[in-house]
Length: 478
Image 1 (cartoon, rainbow, N blue to C red):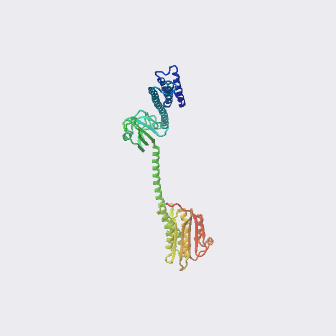
Image 2: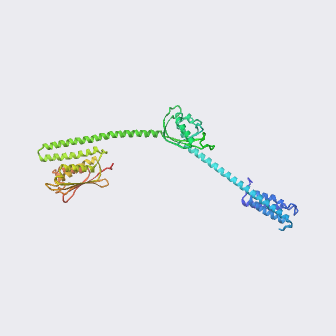
Image 3: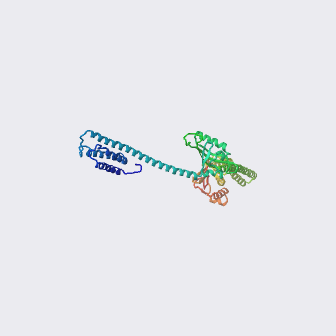
């Protein structure tokens, strides 16, 4: 039965043929015989053995009908004269039914066993393939992997990456204490705790004194590693013979690089602090030196009787003071290469208002300034232009007792564009063209500095005076 494999159709055909063979086997016998039914039993059993429940039942039915027709009086009829013959027919049918059921169950069990064996074989092949794949992954993995076994944590397996941690050092079959005696006092308690608590342990950037090979002295090395407790093969949790999987990666070079980078950053911060102090001192000294120049110009102006020369010296004095004011702000700000020009505008205009006595003359000054950061290379020429334009309005726009207003506006005119506007409602000013003839030094200075800024300067028409300076500049705040 185990070796013979028949299709379902073949088993039913065999059942019919065996029923026919059962009747043919009775032909030599005198009918009816004293044992009219027993000759059919072997054929029923053989049919059930070959086909199980269905074919066995078919053979049982056919053989019972043959026995009734050919071996039970009256012959060749389906009638029974003696009631005892019903008992024989029933026994034949019962025997065939029970045998068919038993052989059917046996056949199903054998089929299930065969299927189970096939599944187990497939699972075994799959497990073997996965094991080979896992072994290949571990073997070729760049991550150092080792398997420890036993109460003394003996190396059962190490992959090439782990062996590369100490080339030439025998590992498999030796204990952790034998391979890494320098770190045993730290590593072994961790391994024992992992196995006892059955908890995974992770460590990052951990420093250990380990040698790199035979006869080499230990050195400080750094690792990221994980200890994974594996269940004991016998199923005992926390067993002293349980295995521990070690997964490690050396980060010594990264640690040293990070330490070197930190040291470099510290040196750069120290150097930057020194240069900041030095640059602050430079701005402070420039401011002081400009203040000395301002004082000298003031002393010279006071010693000259010529009113025109005295006025020229005072104007130069104010120009130098406007530059000194920039260095004063640079000295006090966090960024030594830029200033908040809005604050500078406010401070310069207040100083000019004080110099020219705008309160006593009843002249009002209106300042509107966006917070714009400006580098020193643009702040100085822009400051001098502002000084000249505001000074021009305060000196010439309101002669005698005339009163009025001076407006100063600093704003962002677009992406990367700055607009500086100075206007008044005074008596007005000649167009810029006559300034080139040398009669107005202030406007000549404005023209020169406008070119230096690569800016455009527009002079408005109508009553009063209006100058609009536009140039590219500005720096991100902070």
